[in-house]
Image (cartoon, rainbow, N blue to C red; front, side, top):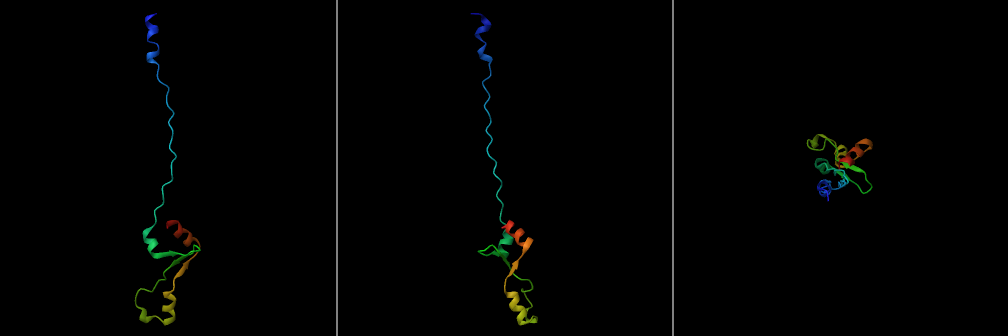
Length: 87
């Protein structure tokens, strides 16, 4: 056998393995904690918020106005959609 023929297969590179890419998952969205404390979502998906002007100085406001301030208000339209995205 010829001397060069003996070493022919020694220098052959092994076949390259195909790299299998892992499926990339989208990152989870975090809940906006400040918003979740201020807002409530009803069973039908409506967003309730507290009304403004109800913190203090209630003696200068009429009874009717105080009753309306006590009741929660609905967020509507784009505000409600933007709020639900953050929750």
